[in-house]
Amino acid sequence: MPTISAFYGILIRMFFNDHAPPHFHARYGEFEATIDIDTLVVIQGQLPSRALNLAQEWAMIHREELLEAWRLCRENRPPRKIEPLA
Image 1 (cartoon, one colour):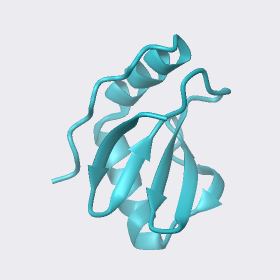
Image 2 (cartoon, rainbow, N blue to C red):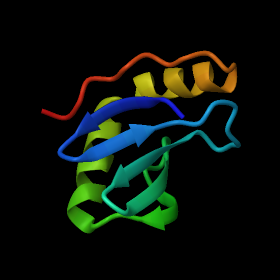
Image 3 (spheres, rainbow, N blue to C red):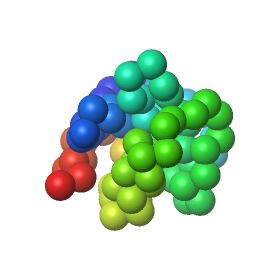
């Protein structure tokens, strides 16, 4: 599972050839959430509210890059790294 970004202790990852809908995995410590790219809603799991807010803010800024990373992962190709939240 490639890590495509990391910021404030949050790792953003995607699985190769993962199931729909387009989503990413955010991990913070022992917490992990699967977040829909289009709606930014948590599909599964949980994160502390501050980490979730940061992950959603980052995803809003980088939505197009996330969709491109999703497409590459679906094709079993490595995605590009995405700038962290500054």
